[in-house]
Length: 395
Image (cartoon, rainbow, N blue to C red):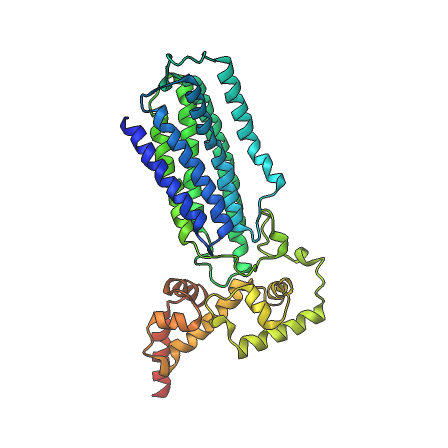
């Protein structure tokens, strides 16, 4: 065994253990994690297949065929990772019969590989062995190009899905930390970049017949640095859709974003103007008396239950009556609460972190960002300015 096959073997074993861990995790986006477990398992099988393919072994031809078919499972990585992104960004997501179409490229490539093996068939002879590394470089490079093109396509689809999801968040969440999936967006973007580079290298290899970057090194580095990072991050990702706060219309697939909500969006709404005025009064009473914005994990569904206003009507009231989305509406209340705490003599000893927590923010960084956005000052500047103004007024 050489260094390439050794790294591939250890990487494959690590991946299989990681897939088992993802499959066993309960209570954290369980369905999505099981999809990701299959993605990691497929990638790990490919790494395991690299061990004999690049270990300078000699194997019977029938075993070579089996190993190559196992390696073909890598063509499932793009569709499965895309399915994971859909499951993370769409409440109630479940794979259905129509998703079988995403398997079609894999089946076609397997069929192509079988036909290639049949046309280059060697008679089975126990005394005859064929070096795994004697496979056609041109055919392998062609398969590599197909894989990278397929991966590029599905990474583009995944990024589109993530962008639409992120644009919808302010209509559903009062805090975006932990639910924005920015880590997944970055890692998928890196996968896209590496897929483009890998495809370019494979094309250049065929065009120039120059193997300037070994395929095995690139494939292993891609999986060990990105695929498994996604898996590790997924294990610690908090639950996003624990209360199904997104509208039912978003289920089953990644749809066009709703933001910013325009008037034509509500042309078919059953909400009348009289109801909207009544709902606004109910909302203001709840915000004043119960102060739900102090809950740093408040979501649209939570406020809908408190006000007894349907979530879709509540969102419409916020957009039309206040010209704000849910995120803006809640955080404006939190900013007003923070301003009171910063200028109140009895709260003068509170640290900025304590002010942030008591105002309903879940982190000091989020508090600073929103405060400066709405007040055009840092909290410390606002406290100093208003405290000195009160002193001068007293004198």
